[in-house]
Image (cartoon, rainbow, N blue to C red):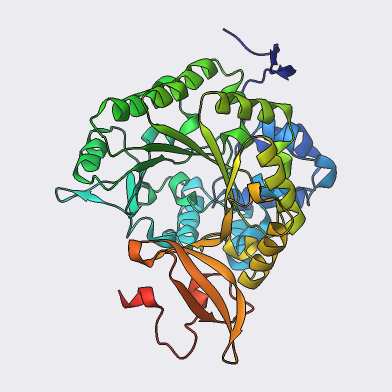
Length: 444
C-alpha cells in the first residue's frame, strides 16, 4: 500500500500521510529552507557534522522548526549542528581541512582524532556498565542498576533524527570500538535467567522504533516466549513520537506495530515508553497528539523525560507548559536530567544551582498530578544524583543531594552534601562538604 499524498481520518482529525525522508550531511543543502541561510552558517553545519552525527527529516524540517526564527528556534538548535557545539580549536581544526579540500581519508583522520578528545564514555557506559556471561562480555547490553538491564538491538542503532546534545553520539560515528549492539536475544535471555533480580528491560539505541515492526517483534516475542517470571516491564527508549509520529499513524506497518504493543499487554507484561520531549513545540502537532492516543490505546504507558538544555528549554515556564501538556495528553512526566559530560556539554549545560532553581520554580507552578517528575538529576558514574537544593548548615553553604539510583542499591535516597559551587555543572566539579575527604559512594 502506498501512503504518499494521501490523508487519513484518525481520532477525528485529518492526518496528511508523509513518506519519511532523511536529511544528512550529504544532502542537507537540498532542504529548501536552508537556501536562505548565510553561507557561513551552512559551512558551520558541515564542519560540526563531520565530527558529530547529523540527521534530520522532513517532518522536523517542515512541521516543527519555525524558519522565521533562525538561528534561535529551539528545534533548529536541537537538530542542526551549531558552531559553538564544538570547542573553538576543534572547529578550526576541522574547518581548515575542509577549506583545503583535503581527501576523505584525511578528513576522517582529523574527525576521529577530535572525537577521541571528547568523552566517549560518559557515566562509564562502555567501561563500567557492560555485563558478562560465562566470562564473555555482552557487547550490546548494559547492566548498571540491579533491577534494570539495557539492550541495544543491532537494527535499532540509528534514529529518525539526531539530537545535537546526544550523549550516545559515539554509537553513530562509525568507530567500532565505540559501538554496543547485539543482533540476537539468546545471550540476553540466558543472562536474564541467571539474574532473577532483573525485573525491567529497556530496549534502546539509537531508537528501537526505527525498526520495522516484524524486526522489533523478533526481539519482543523472544522475551515473551522465554520462561522469565522475573521480567515484569519492557521499556522502549524512543524519540519517535517527537521526530516521526507517523510511525504510529500511516507508516505501512503502523497497525502491525500497535498490535505488537497489545501483544505485550496480553502476555501480562507492562509496556512503558520512555519518550523524549525536549520542548513544548514537539507536542503541538495533530500528528504527535494522535500518535500518543494510538500508543496509549494499546495499553502502553508513556513516561516523558528530557535534559535541561541551555538555548532550548532553560526557562521554568517552558517546563511548566511542557509538563502540563504532557499530562493533558495522558503522559507521565518522569525526569529532568542534567546534560551528560560528553561532546557538547559546555554548550548545553547551565550551572547546577540554576538548574535547581528552574526545576523548583516549575515544580511550584504545576498541580500534584504533574509532580511525578524527578530532577534535576545527573546520570553520573555512581548513579542518578538528584539536586535537592541549596542550604546553609553550621555556617557552611552546601548543595543537598541524594542518589535516586545507585550501582549499590543501598546508596538510593541517602542524602549527602557538597560544598556550594555556583559554577559547577557536573558531579565531578563538586567537593564533599564539612571537611570530608570523599563522598560516601567513593569509599566503596
